[in-house]
Image (cartoon, rainbow, N blue to C red):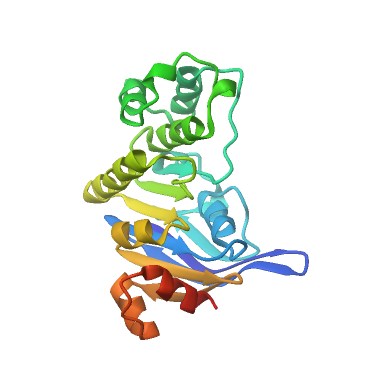
Length: 235
């Protein structure tokens, strides 16, 4: 579903992503972890086609991203870390706009608003939403159209504990439905519980990859706290 081959992105002298390769299959949840500035968000933006790679090749559902095919957007659901909305629209109006761009069925909108707990604010202007409400609206937009590939950059920021639990169950349901899910998060307990595989980035490079158990074995740490493994891999 997602294929990244020897991808590099530079900003002047800074190499934000350095020769990274990875593949994520249908029915798999893959988590990217790393310190701030490790290159996770840049890599995600390249995968969704927002940022162009300087070197390498990326494809989603066998469609080459460099060709910028209009059909590619139908395969994708994306939640960026930094959310931007049209604040003069209501929540429902914003999702109707997104549904039109994705050619998605608008009947899904009230279902997702209810699931993510913001149905009560559907007719309120997005400019008046709290951080948590904006994150939930972004999640609604990402899952509209039931995309084959779901990419979530720091989806837990601003969410309460109960919504974190609901999101974890939702991500697992997306996997069972055969979708490929790519997640970035600093919450190691969440990453360990939800992921089939974990990729560890450091200074733009993918320095380790595997299941939580495999990463523990690689570091020689048998600690129950996965943060200990994460910190050793990113030192």
